Length: 126
Image (cartoon, rainbow, N blue to C red):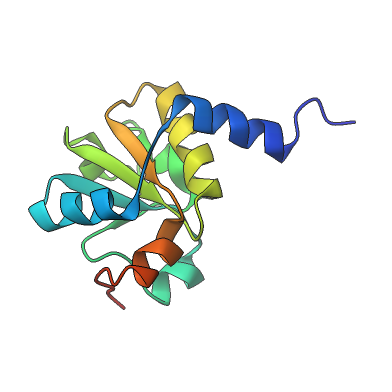
């Protein structure tokens, strides 16, 4: 029997991680005030993503975020606000919680994920 299921993990993540709506995310992107971090799988990212994002699949997130790891992406340590997103908002909430636990601050995740981004008319790069 699981001690914690996905529902409890998501509830805990959403209680501690700031969630922003797509309008706020689009404004941050337009002003260049944030680094967008796509935590989806590679095949999802290849089908379309937020222009200029950093691709950090959730399965490799800790290695990409840690400056001591060979696969570290310096954009995650640049001091800009991080906006994590996935397809619909679940994985990004969990990923943001993981980054918080690693000591990374100034982050949030996108409510509704890439689906909300596309539906709102946000720019997409392929």
